[in-house]
Image (tube, rainbow, N blue to C red):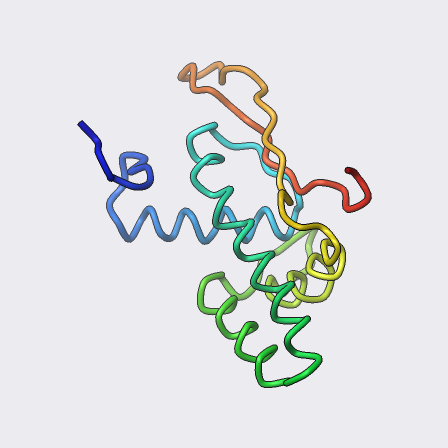
Length: 139
């Protein structure tokens, strides 16, 4: 029985699982859409939502006290990799999170991601899903 056991192990040890989570969230922030297994998508979805919420709150609180925005940026930087290469260019993950995504979802109270199941992978029959950021003006 799994009473009060949180999260999925994904057949990885703790360090590998944490690295996988960080990298998938960073890819979601940079590409705004990723194709992965359903189990991984369900695992990273709450983390991605929390990172966007952290950025939103950091920007709002940073208007009254700039130190709070710096703190939020540092919190995000500690939980995400520094850069990603997207179409040949290096993208700073935290800068994109605070510069593009947080203002985009400023008025949205939550639910920044959508998961769409796309069937089974041919090689190993794993359930696949697309995890994407929703368009800001959708309601």
